[in-house]
Image (spheres, rainbow, N blue to C red):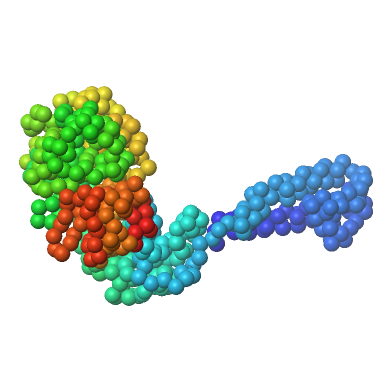
Length: 544
């Protein structure tokens, strides 16, 4: 019984008790003070008529003052109980009757779909990724109000208990390609165990919040156990190590000597302040800049007039030597490393992973955290200027914010930017909607936990699809040529029609990367395209 039902039941019981009390009082008063005894049913009728204002006063006038006061009190009580209760009880009843309700079972034929148990912020990214590949899904949500809300927003959601066999059967788990358990660690293991009871062959993917509990998810029978915060820490660390190690960052091998890499432009680089056309990147390095992030927004292809700043991240394709040349241009002119050069703010799971990545790349760093524990160099508050100064932020080249609270991250960004206007600030965002606020506060590069983990889930589930997802808004996708066969790239005009860039053509075991407008697409070719989720969707719709 929900809150509204309990409230209604209590109201009805209370109203009946008040009516009976007034009936006994009226029956007694008419005999004792008016000398006009009434039958009990007559007294009940007078009270009900008074409460409902449908005929009160049938025994008026009353001679005694006590009866007059009694009737006045009865009048006021009736109005309050009947009419003021309408907004509290009746209106919610009408709203409940008119509200869209999520079904309790899948109402259509469904197979090879993904069952998502509980819906978190990373679920939005996962659903978007699944929809871009035309993969069906069902969200199983145990909370009725939340299920109704998701259903009303257009998600394929049902109200059922994912920890029960019945609930997963209603989601047609036996016909699904995979199940994602995305609640708490304890609930996730329960969901996996239940899934194994329904169908042992369905692939199960479980999200673990505490890495040391991953073994229990394995013991429960999960086929894959993912730790989103660990991946986020690795991604944040790579923004520093990319500039000093031999690894070219987020790298995707397409051939023996052709890669696509994500390279951030560091503050102090000679590229800062130039437009893409003025930079001479293509002429001097030979790489093809197929996209770029400007303050967190991905643009593909970027305009030649786009200004490069310390927060710009280039997505470029080329040979290893060409990308190395571009990497050297993106770095600061003076790149000596000393202790305190990089400051890690926050030493939870994400911070520890970042520190591990920096250690592996031999990058000196200082850690500041509120708690005293092994690995922490400075104990202090990330929102206090004095504590940040003690950690060496004023002289640092890079600060990585690994705080779990987005509000603290935003404030710390403002403080750090005030202490050191030239420092590079790399930040973690717990919620995707806060990413732009962090950029406005002064961050140079922001990664959202929800986005990173959602894409990681999608990549794990869609392992049979040839998808390479980066940790931001862009995808690198291998796809069939479809209706493009027989056309030249110039005739197809893929960029202007879809916003995607054809970066390579795979043909007979070789990779063609020197793609001019006269290159003809042939049957049997594979295209490698880069673009946003929406751009990839447009490409699929137009050319499949």
